[in-house]
Image 1 (cartoon, rainbow, N blue to C red):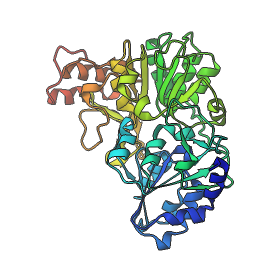
Image 2: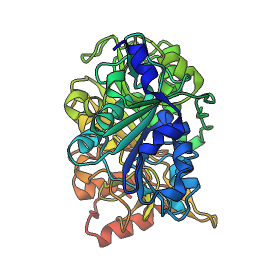
Image 3: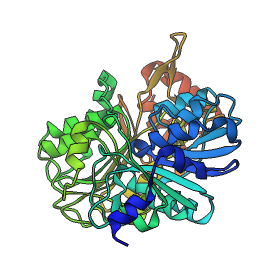
Length: 444
């Protein structure tokens, strides 16, 4: 069949398409700006006739109508494998459950273990060959779509087309329904103003970044601060190999810092798995031969990261204990974000020749009552451990960077206390003494 004829034969309304969803089904919304808002709205309007429909997504910026219209969760049960700020608020309201998952394994979990009755996602318009680009969701999309019993695509004319290494598109012959409609511009994510602590942390990391390094920058203010610092520095010939392509990479490219010339893996090309940020970023990645997107099963695989000389990974965390265990996703039992690819890059960067992995945080936080607390604590007691102590590399606060690789428990305690806020250091030493991880010869 001619691809345009096949497209027209499968073209329907959102209301008609979501009629395939049955009570008890597992539905997938995929990720980030490829969220199918028209289909979500149509599915939410079926609330009273559906029960126990389980929905998965991640990094969706909302609103998700099936959740907003069903506060009892009797009809729809939403789950996320990496919480956006919006999904975190849903979790706080008891309307979202977290799915523990390491990003490099995500699509393999779908292929081997999970059920997907209906997959829905937004995509750019079909090309003349009958293919839909999977755009900003390529990192996870293909494995989910392949597992689904029914695939519904929502055409969003605003999504960029991103060239792929592989698994970046789906053919009309593999699709059951296509939906069209009007969409607002893609959501943009303003860069927050940096704090004095952010600037100090970035300054502590900058001396470790060499000419020709490959960069992975995580989510949040810190990656953008690092990007700006590098853009203003003399560092040159950097490469992009990252789970998430954010505005920091666009700024580095615009400043002439990213050339990808020294990459051993896809030389001359920046590689990513997912994309979201500003309109400038979306315009930059759109049909840009210098940017490639691929499944996170490839991008985040430690054996691939390890091929990049001087690989530098920079991510954030919430707290660290004196043993070097890292919590990057919860406050007590409250889910903040997710494991994501942090552990992938800790592993891969540590394997790479000249590689380094940095986990950053401010040394303290202030609670709602105005009381200040240390983010370096004696030991965890309920928080989720994102990174085991056996894989922790550099820990960075505004007071400096310490390398925990190969360090004993007393060396770790000494190093971490040295970058704790001065107000809490004596108390942490007393706790380290109680735990048997402080030597009397240690510096105070």
